[in-house]
Image 1 (spheres, helix red, strand yellow):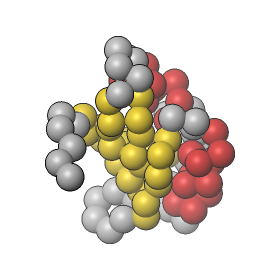
Image 2 (cartoon, one colour):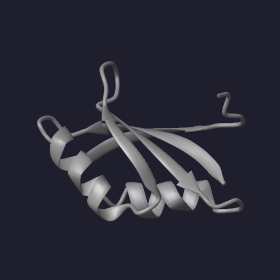
Image 3 (cartoon, one colour):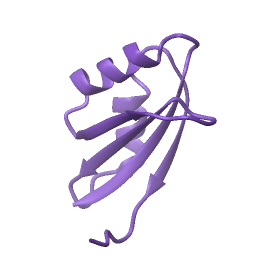
Length: 80
């Protein structure tokens, strides 16, 4: 299992709609947070090993209306 975080910049006034659309339409998504800073939302996503991250972001995340920009962070280890 691989975990990625996708930061999402939304069209003005659309962050809550985008968050709801992500939750409703992206089954691999674990959580979506509203955040401060350059981006509006941060999505935590769990993908099966070997799943093409670029294809996932392009086909699942970028398919959501009112998204202006994204930035994806790949994770390596989780410390608990």
